[in-house]
Length: 267
Image 1 (cartoon, one colour):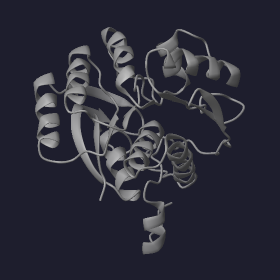
Image 2: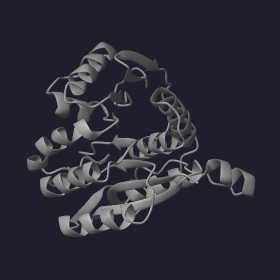
Image 3: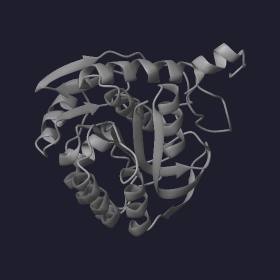
């Protein structure tokens, strides 16, 4: 079985972060492992508090995994301070990590800033060790300094992000009003992944989920473009079968196929 490591924050409501990553990895048939960078108190309404894990403990977790287990892919999610970002980058280079997926988590769905302002530069500096970076439109705007309203501007931003040294760039278009098309810059060519807007408010953890799916497929030796295509299909089905849990933005259906087979009414 392929083994995938997620380096990210914990979500107490189970919809995003480490919890969403491990659910996604399990659903896609890889073995998920975790390095927790922060503990968040959050639910479907918002983020109430965040406690960063010390860089020393983050380093110890990473070393514990790599010193014992072969890691086939790495997904990096919420990392809120520059010292921890520097530790992660140093260790992934040291261990010659492969199939690195960077999801530059900056702001929660409820508008809570998960990335400290001083860490923005550090995140930009970490882009060059990734095989693919997966920002949404607001995150791509921070990474590039551009305003993104159209698909052509998404493409412009992708090429600008690539200048940082990352091999491939996947910009998610869900924040646009007119469609849900995503774009992938792969082998210096733009590929458009057509999407349709799904009528649901339950989209908590979508970014965590699709980046973990990409890491899972890369671990299983799919090419970047095919991994992104399959991950887009997975997240679309998960959103279509999302959960009306809580009074705010509910989670997506990571295990929809398992629930269906078990006859569980998951909606």
